[in-house]
Length: 106
Image 1: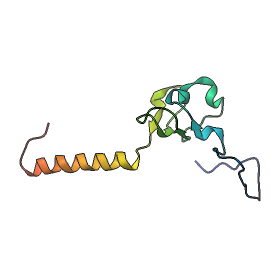
Image 2 (image 1 turned 90 degrees about the vertical axis):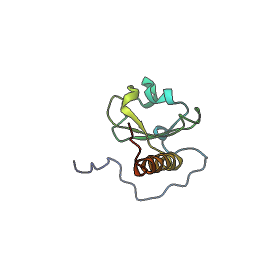
Image 3 (image 1 turned 180 degrees about the horizontal axis):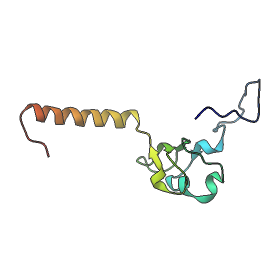
């Protein structure tokens, strides 16, 4: 699919004068807000990135909408953080060490 051109052409930059996201679709407080009907209205789109910022440490993070509707939590995927990836890498290295030692893995 080719890139869709927007309907508003702007040849300027923006100087924000407040400490918040530029577009309200980019941040919600709670994970549950991702699936609330009124959060994005009719303007959610596949590929959308939204940050959950005021929930539990586990739920906070960057989420990508894989498919519509946005009201289905299964359509949202949490993007792994750097620490998540480091933990996964460490676990894989441990499993690899066990495999090299000749232990049978399930």
